[in-house]
Length: 337
Image (cartoon, rainbow, N blue to C red):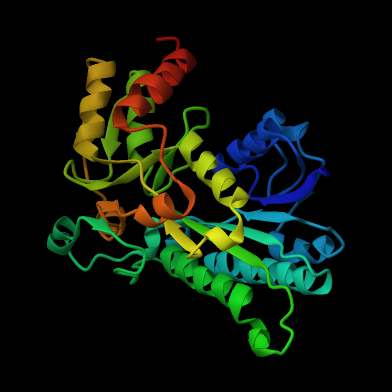
């Protein structure tokens, strides 16, 4: 069987590096990468070609590539997007739309649907207040889609754009002989935590930041309240979900956007785990109003029953397995504990 040609944008990020390694481990792929930065050494040998620079200005160079799958990970994340909202919109929306146009063009011209894998986020949700958040429980895909951040707005809009380009583009689905449309598939990720890359300052990074600081014997000031609760996931489960969903035959999928979940914890529970693993850790809670407000707008947990029923999703790491088998052993090794 011929190898599939894959494009991974945002390849230098936490998810990007792990995905490139996951694709290489699974085998059967030729990988082209794109990012603002040069590739780190751990994935440089895996990438067949790397396009470095602003994706919005690089997309034209990809029109001659016969991509089977596009994993579009490049994005400006929550905290950064609030500081530079216009730039975030350009990166998150214009970059996505141009890639969708590329995939739509190639799907129609060569009569073969390009798979477009789009990582979305729990930032697409907007809980109106804390009481509603606590009462809502596990939130379904179509509920509370009223994001409070530019990043969340961008992600939600791009979910809609992806659905449009894959089902209704140009209203060509109404033609007597409709063309091949692109195959858009999206996963709404919770807060993702990698044991092998350092936290990048994301709004959900207070958990891993706390643990890294504790492992180094450094004090940590947590920017959310101790009772703040959202869902999290180990990075290997995130990569597993992307590879699983990419492999599922289209006819088995009843939706294009899926929640996935693993475990839900409060910041206080992260603190308890840090103190248990590193006695004497110095952790204080000093909420930052803006960052606290963002996290408060995200649900405590999500309902991933659609992913479980449509494509057999199930995480490998619950909270105990995440800490005991994945995260803590690695950071203890990193810091010589």
